[in-house]
Image 1 (cartoon, rainbow, N blue to C red):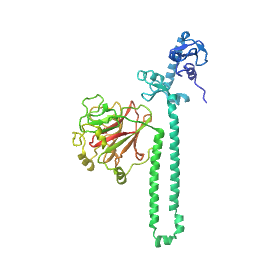
Image 2 (tube, rainbow, N blue to C red):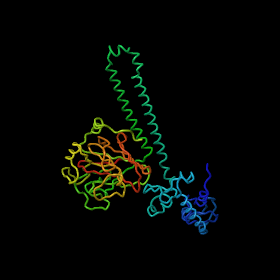
Image 3 (cartoon, helix red, strand yellow):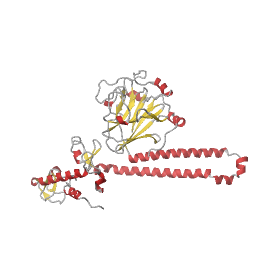
Image 4 (cartoon, rainbow, N blue to C red):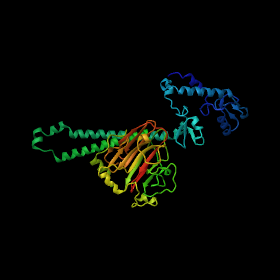
Length: 462
């Protein structure tokens, strides 16, 4: 193991043994040990008499505490040396520093977890105005409740994977036994098999059944593999819509999980963060790090229950694998009312004639996107989205959209990898891959929905 750097040794000498961070306003007690002033005060307030040092257990008196101004100056100098060293090019840093994860704003180690904002903080972030009054705990303490759950979940998933792999292996062996040429030739001489005796209908039927089972098994295995990779790498988030960003023609359910396009201007007051005239809305929580996942159910009332399956069968399916009582909850809605500039059922004719007309958009958007005027849904403008219609799925990465699916999935999975710069879309029902954006994110990234068609709704899951 490589020896620690001299700066690392100095850092260890100026750490408070209570908060495990750099000494702030250091004070010394009767035994000579040094602590942060606020840390030792908390010990004094929470402990009974007599007071004992947390390091040597020697008794001390609160009134004998003395500030160590020279130590405060030393801590500040060491901190400045640390900042200067972290600003060096990454390839010039020692190996132990390359592996360390530091705060992008203050270049400090990440010690704390903010429960209110669900963010990892350094000591300076914790003391900032933004997080000062939030509930923050050490990372080790925050992780403890989840370790057992994660390990149990991994154990279950690995068991499911092993069972499916065994099932696949058994199925392949049975199919090979059925279709083995040498076995067939041994039972049926070549001349009689090809000329005198046709293939038995029972054998044909059994071969077709095994072929269908194998196709179903492969599809299930792809879906399980995609779900396994997603559950291991991503955190499934419960997304709530921010009604204050919703366009006036959109009605958001009271629980913030669903929305519909009403055709009526539902909001009397215009918030500065509301989209206008685009029928769009953002999620209530934004993300600045980590890997998160959620799903969007796309529902149009005239869709049949088997429409997606029929579309996949006759119009082509997705490729690859990813590693109504509802309306009673809204007031003032009428299906006969149309709004200029938005779609109704008659506009379905445009799609049948080959013109692309989106009815909803699903994905993510940067917090700083323009809220006024008509939008261009491209990554350059801060949008990473899929555009959906009854004709299929379209992606817009430049001046013109291009079609990637000839059918519209009923459930879209959205996976955001902020640090990796990726947004991946899947068919959430089959776990099949649809499309992936690669980008470099800055600022907060929010869930984004857009809907401009009557008799339709979008629902967030879970």
